[in-house]
Image (cartoon, helix red, strand yellow):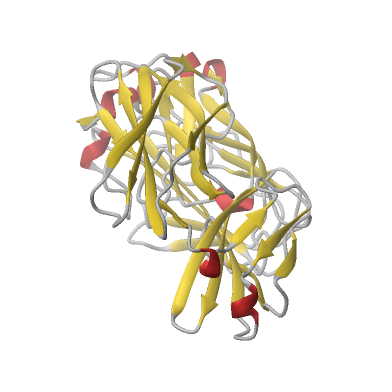
Length: 376
């Protein structure tokens, strides 16, 4: 069955039976399979095939806990040759590494895996993305299939590098498997890239916490390739920054690494921090900005952070009478909690929330402050 002209094939059952040579041809970003999955936790298989009939299924399984009111949209397509940058999916702006086209390290195919309509997004386990052999080893590519990893495009941050799921390449089966994917890190578009040249360093988080006498900056990387050092920069306007510290990087690492640096002479009032990392070839990269407020009358805190079961948000006593609105958003921008602050310390129960990054937004009149939380 071939889907064309932006049509959608809707599946309402729990199984798609494939004949020996049958399958579904998508081969475009908007030629879609829409599967009414709900909260079905069985292993499900979308029997995609290429134009030439090669079997390249997308396999997935939902972890229990999802609501029964959603569906998943799937699509997959390849380009005319090795240069993926010439046929990017919607919202994806590049496949660059260190400012240069990294297409020769990518399998010549993109995948769409997109939950929609859920009140509570599901976590995914055992996601498998399959490809045709020549899409990895064809002319123009420089890929070791055994080193392939999965990456997804964050359509909110507009980059590939905020999250690296644990991937297992099975070159004999021409697929890469992602064992676990929490709901906060499910975004539509995926690619497979040689792990020797990922897109690019994976910075899991960068944060700054104001303490009584200093500011603690901390960050974690999921993977590093040819990184030389980290520099911590600070400014008072979010535009101009100066270096306040430096730490050596791992160089090359495929496991999570954590770092921290203490600013022993922080600025009064609101200040901004960012992380700069430098590769061995001199290439430079920057994190997003984080801010702290050292004005004691307006200081907000969240602790502990990272959090396992519950954390506490501290609001200045002077602001409690204004009943600030406290809202929590997941990494996809979905609001998962909203409540009015009625005491200086507010407890946030997070045991039922999926692991990942969250933002706490506190609104007092026209003033809005944001705190970052990591749920373990």
